[in-house]
Image (cartoon, rainbow, N blue to C red; front, side):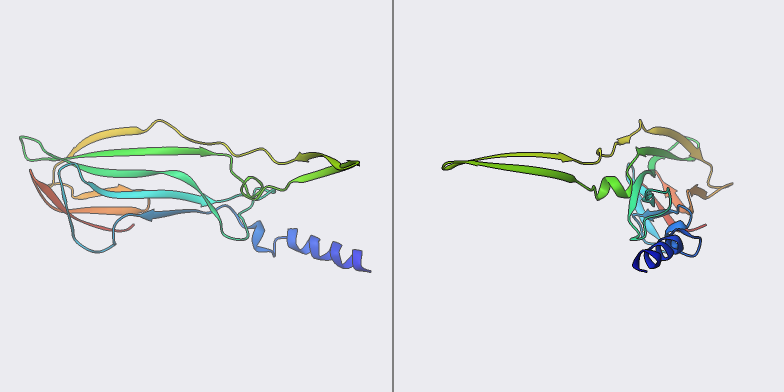
Length: 180
């Protein structure tokens, strides 16, 4: 009877009704408050968007505890003004490759041991098996520099955010960050 209840419960958890079978979800986090005018000087980061995704479980579905793994970031820097009055920005993005899963974050170990006592001496031998560690690597950054004619365009889109340039001069830029 207990086996039947366990089998039914396991089948229900693996079915579409359980949260663990949802699709992987990406999320973003920014380093600036939204909808607030901010000033940045030359070389300062206007916005940095950190990318994260759900930590996959054994079946490739999101972790039921909501844990996430890093996927990289995108940042925009103010680099100054051109001679003809255009604002210069640098976009840098870094992708992170990760094969982290719930199993590598919370590895399971199996082991056995043996103790042999001879007189006043004890000899201990152990053997253990665990999961392989995760590989997390930052790929080389992609960097692009561009000039924006503020009389024609004041918007820079970064992932799911919009950076609206309010004003710029050779020393700095006023901007606002909001969701797209």
